[in-house]
Image (cartoon, rainbow, N blue to C red; front, side, top):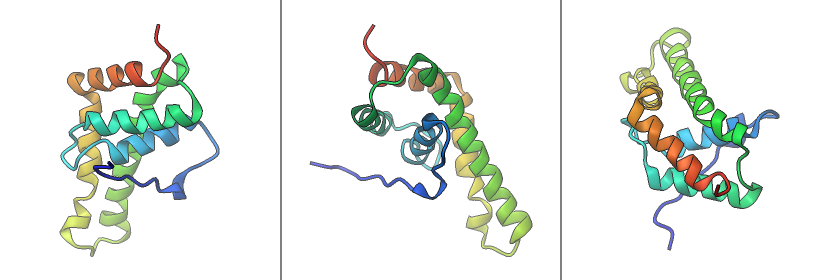
Length: 129
């Protein structure tokens, strides 16, 4: 039974580090609007990736949290610029859309969330020691 579904927007997928695309998917799916980590969704997305591609290398596992933060920051900056500079006449909710991504950046910087993310990566993304 599927309790919820997530979609991947392949528009921004690129030729580059696979971990960046995985990080984008995790940022989009595994955090709520307030920037709270949803451990169950993070685990499920990571397990799906590992099932399809294989375990993360130690380098990939180490890079993933930083790539997630880079994606969230890039999205926040894009949203702020787009809705404050390029098109300043958008509704207030669009103007504040960057705050969701900023909350994720802040969460990833917080020790508690960082510890949980790293634990989830070790438990579900890498081979058992």
